[in-house]
Amino acid sequence: MKPLIRIEKLNKSFHNNQVLKNIDLNIYEGEVVCIIGASGSGKSTLLRCINLLEEPDSGNIYFEDQNILDSQFNLNKLRTKIGMVFQSFNLFNNYNVLDNCLIGPTKVLGLSKKDAKEKAIYYLTKVGLENFVHQDVNRLSGGQKQRVAIARALTMEPRVMLFDEPTSALDPEMVGEVLSVMREVAKSRMTMVVVTHEMDFAREVATRVIYMDDGQIIEEGTPEQIFTKPQHPRTNEFLRRILER
Image (cartoon, rainbow, N blue to C red):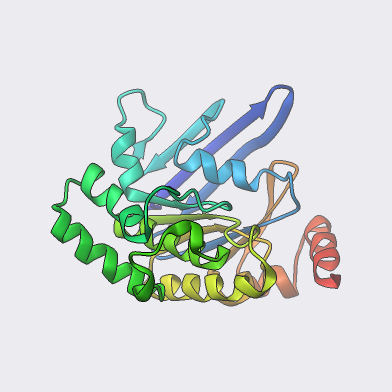
């Protein structure tokens, strides 16, 4: 089976700080890949390189067998197929919930407002916000805002969803509602790449867990392998520290 995303020898630096070092990684359709590791290990930068929010210094990234770093590649087309959910929601604060979800389907996919509205309401219902369709986003809780962000990404019906620490900006009592929605997205067989500090979520939902440290993939495997029988001392030490907390 060919990978949906293939990353080869990826490197990225900011000034004199090399954040990604020769990353090789395949993502297959239907996988839920959770990337764990300490802050500053390169997890979010790797995610942002996949949809070219950050441009790598060297290496290759293939999506659907096309090199997205090729100068001829249609970047706008890529963005319709790869959804992204950020730490800080990135909603349009001057729009209500529904209008936040209509922008992509109407402006990018060219759907009629009627078709886009049907799709948006369908996904807002999926994330439990059918009663908040016309709500001002500034009046939502953090958990509700993140659920709007997930619904907005889903309205584009992407092939892959990227989640960049989607619960890190939330109050603890709101984390569960967002993780619950993500579990439902995973059940739909959506391909997901999730940067997360939520170890219970990674253990329960991931098909594969990747541990990163100092810009490198140190170890990868099933949740059982990584959480109960890690092979690398650095993985073992990280999990011991994080699970003690």
